[in-house]
Length: 173
Image (tube, rainbow, N blue to C red; front, side):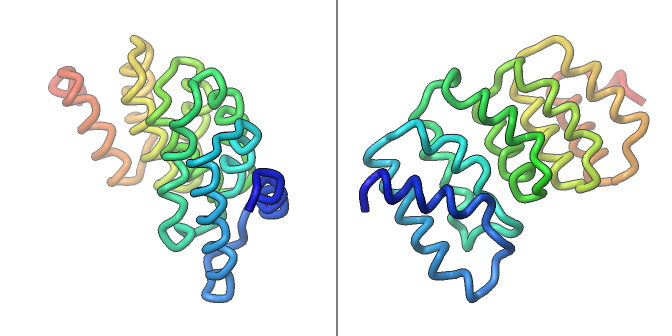
């Protein structure tokens, strides 16, 4: 496999469909593409990987995509990550909100705050985790504001945990 073939594979799988046994062979090839770009970095793969996530975990491969993205600078990844966080595809939003935690920069605050209203509580939790990694004075106020309207107990617990770790949790009702 060369980079051109790997790029074409990614372009043809934007995003992957939901995990099914029938898709297993395609996910194996996706993993081969991942390994290729680990060994032969090519920044053209950044937006393609970020928009490739389907529903499910890609038989364990989705978790490994971050390793490829870590080969690139924050400046190379962030514009594509911001775009992917606004995706209409739940799998893309979910996995990219997880990846955002590894690229903690204030420019991710607006799209992550937007995800705090996502219908999926797992995406909201991932957005909270990513926000908690960003060193910015606005984060505490954002999370305190979310506490007032959030109804999911798991999301509420995570917010409380983040606030406690920042040493203001005792001051939050």
